[in-house]
Image 1 (cartoon, rainbow, N blue to C red):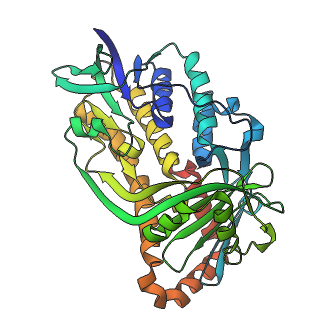
Image 2: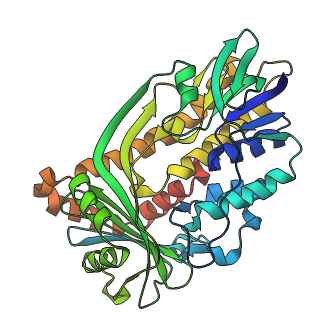
Image 3: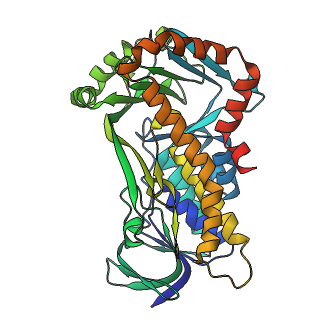
Length: 395
């Protein structure tokens, strides 16, 4: 039976990043469920797009993965505009004194870069089989693989998504609340340059519509729509969806982008607010969506997951000599390190979702006043931009 210091369950972005980071911290890691990323599309961009903040980019650079992403597949965000109730809040990278507000990258491109870095990391053993069952033992975990193999590890890391089996095996409870919304996504081609600006508006039905800039004259649509509307949007052809989005350009103050045309397929997934009762247990640590899922309006889901990984790697790398990896007091240092940022993002995104709900339309004048006031407070905008970068949280 094979044995390692850590078994990471989940072969997605967060799992692969965790395997790399923990190996670089000097640990022997098994990455379970590790498959190769999809090949780069011959034309256009992949459907799943992420907005990485400065802390995530720094972290990927430290993993020797960021520089493996082709520059032509990355779009730096130089401006951001949030529009609601006739008011707007604007952010500008130059005014904030930063290189960029965020970097828009395809999920597949990030994963391919992580795969390349993993090929040269001797401390990681990729296990293509998924974990069928896990049992707690006095000195760690015994894992039973789908292919019939077994392995042991002192620490079990759950990076296996919102339906995490690691969370279930460790007996950690879950609080989950559906938003009654689904995210509808599609890449769109614009008639005019987007100016490297990310655009977002709160719609009267309580939804959120965002256009994220892609390289060239394309944008990635993320429309967080109420379930009934989301169902209608899913039934549209990509070109019909492009026409529906075009009708929202005035609300985004972006009429110059019209006409829009489809540049990819339509995708969708349900939105929930979800948090594990704890991100650790004896011998277990949860990362990313296994630990917490927030509304995508702020674009911080993957950023939170990567910063989970970074915090866990730091805590385990600084443990006392001889201290077991699964020792609960050790893992609680990781939990404390992540508590503030995760709670802040959860409260901010959920609070905004509630604030702009259809039942609170009477607050529109006050909401507009608050948005305009924030737009005219440079120091507050600098603080908000700094917090969103993730660097202030990790410093």
